[in-house]
Length: 254
Ligand SMILES: *[C@@H]1O[C@H](CO)[C@@H](O)[C@H](O)[C@H]1NC(C)=O
Image (cartoon, helix red, strand yellow):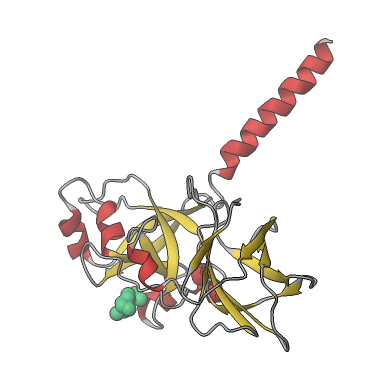
């Protein structure tokens, strides 16, 4: 009796440890940070990930970043979440801000020279400052920060699939957005009505594509594999009435 109680207690304690541990993936690391474009803006247009104007809208709301190669990972890092904070400038608040990777730093400069670099939106950069000191921090321009990979929490939102322009009955390109947990994907597969699972190719960051020799029969299901290997199926998420430039919200998330 006592020992089974102890076993149950130990299991509970270790699952709590796992939960605590899962908040931080890497621990705090050092990197450089710059910001660009509008002081309160999104900076990036989500170009290299394919999010485009979504970066300004909720749930991103301009708290986004472009990142150097070690974080952008040739587009595989799109959608991953990081906490960033700064302590090295008098205007720094030291409180972490959670930001999403939505673009790649343009080649060259500190973005390539540093082991890790965040080219943050002006809004995110300012959010690391003490109240009222956002512009003092922005004026510093290029600073050292600490960053930590964290799970994404898109509270109350399920994963969204945006059919990209250019899709047609034989070709489908979808932007996959708001995955909680890892936030980034290592593989995506598609299954059309009556077909078997087939791999999609990464087209541009968060956009995955599939070309078929014949007409894809909708509805279409999409199976995701997150960067840590967790699988999730969005059944029939692309309806038979699908249209390009429309977003289809699934009823699942990590
Ligand atoms: C940040 O992004 C802007 C706009 O693309 C660019 O001009 C600037 O060089 C970038 N900074 C770094 C360090 O990559």
